[in-house]
Image 1: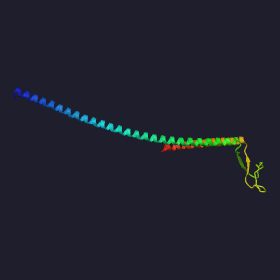
Image 2 (image 1 turned 120 degrees about the vertical axis):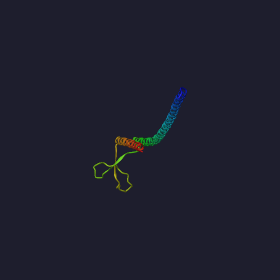
Image 3 (image 1 turned 60 degrees about the vertical axis):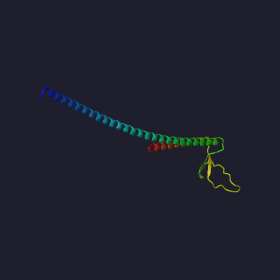
Length: 165
């Protein structure tokens, strides 16, 4: 083999190696680009799934907030109505338009309130004793506090039930 043939053979071997090296590099770059594309697609899908979960959670929270707002409004209205009723009752007690009384057993030594009877008739009804206006006001104040407490308790129970759903 002559030097020229040997040089050409080495040159073709070197060119084949370089070409083979370049082809492998291109294949690797293409495979790498495909894997990066798949990874990017997976990340996009994950972000979309998380976004859908966040939207669903936001809708549930907004629904719960609307229910709680409606419940709060109804309880506030109930509390306002109870306060107005108590205020009317206190006003009626203060103006002597209304007197509170209690049932008294007949055989006790308590002085009874004279009952209005028809002419010539007897009163066989229950004996009642009037309460002092100060005591009546205290009783109304206690029932007012009790009503407020019951309304607040009902509101708390409704709140907990709404959160438990």
